[in-house]
Image (cartoon, rainbow, N blue to C red):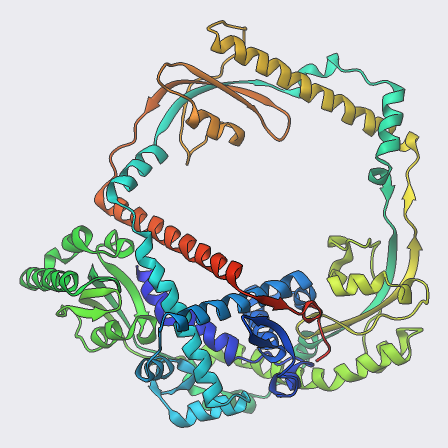
Length: 635
């Protein structure tokens, strides 16, 4: 529940800002983001409602920015050149349009007051923790977005979340169902094992030269070495440029003063709470009962604060914090929903609040700690400032040089020496690379670069590749050094490997045949002479040495009469017999665990119901996709 409180306060709002406000400042694409031309270029239609090229491009850029932030250096910008990835982004937009259309048909609306409250809470539009109209106007103007356009997008996001919340009530799971689920899931069984490995049957296998020949003839593709090539290449790196940039003490001091707010750590508070849950579907009577319960608990903890933890563990609807005696840890003001934060940041340490109503229900809050706001000293952030200034200068230089790099590798396409000399770059040499790329390609392991390396222009015409973005702030160009065409290995070179493979296949089949025969005898009450391991107790969470392939057979086995026998082969071809001799019932789950699992199962059911509803909307809708929109366009 704590995660939910924080996520509702920050998560989706952060995504709105990420998708609609944050701009990925790359060398290309920036102009098109602000450029309104092409806005009528239709990418798809959903029941006649248009998804424009501009909307699709913004969604792509939002996803790129999010992945770049989460993956760091591992992020590959060429990922979004893949039509499948672009199709996924477009599918998301189609789903959003369908949900919004359904919400409107259901007469759901977002009030002006709700819209204003949402926008005012966005940090991007705040100064000193308060909404600033001038900041709001400035940010939207900088991003080339009108107030009306942005507010319409926020309304749509709120409608989507309202539609999702409707399904939260549909996922209610009865407590007795959860108890039965937990007892079955946590049940343990005593087993012993007997294994039949393929190696035990290798002496019984036999492969003739004719079988080897037939296998070779029918699997020549498996024994064909792929085409390989070596390349020389040059890399233009913004990071490398930045590392060489000198930064003066005066510049560091000036940056620190101009960005003082960045180095100010906001006030934090620590609190515990007892939540009496209220959901959107609750009627007035249920809300009144919840309020009365919250007020009664408040009187108890006010009279005896020492019992706050005990009561939180027993009565709080927030399963996540209840097991921690109600403790929510440290948080900043904007980390919680507004009513909760307003109350917590108005309290004195040790104080207990009267019930505070939020969208999650009634909170009785106990403030347990205060960390005042503080400013980090210059020395503590000097290294970060130096890096930031170097990156600024490196970014400017990179932007200036990138065009020169791109032009030279294209205009002087018969050699990399001119661009290397002009920009003081080192010409490097790759190892042998195939069309699949992989680790052998090193820094060149980029889908767009691999495609260029094995293009006719490079292999046949011996030209440089175009300047290709390997990662944000990294351009490269390469040219062919040496090439080996695909070649079928002679049979004599692979004969031993084929023979070993065919023998192992036979041995796996023999192990399975013997294991299945033993299983029939065991189930008939006979003893085929298998060697059982020592008894061990296993559960779905703790398999021990039980092969994963036997997990379901062991726990599906009918335990009316014991012992019971099951068997299965694993991915290595080992056939394992299992003898189940005892069932160990799990302890009855406590109320806190039942509540936590009940919440998790309810969320899963609600998410499944919502997904099913979305599928039904798609099945009924008229959706037209412009397939050419999935190809990356020069912007």
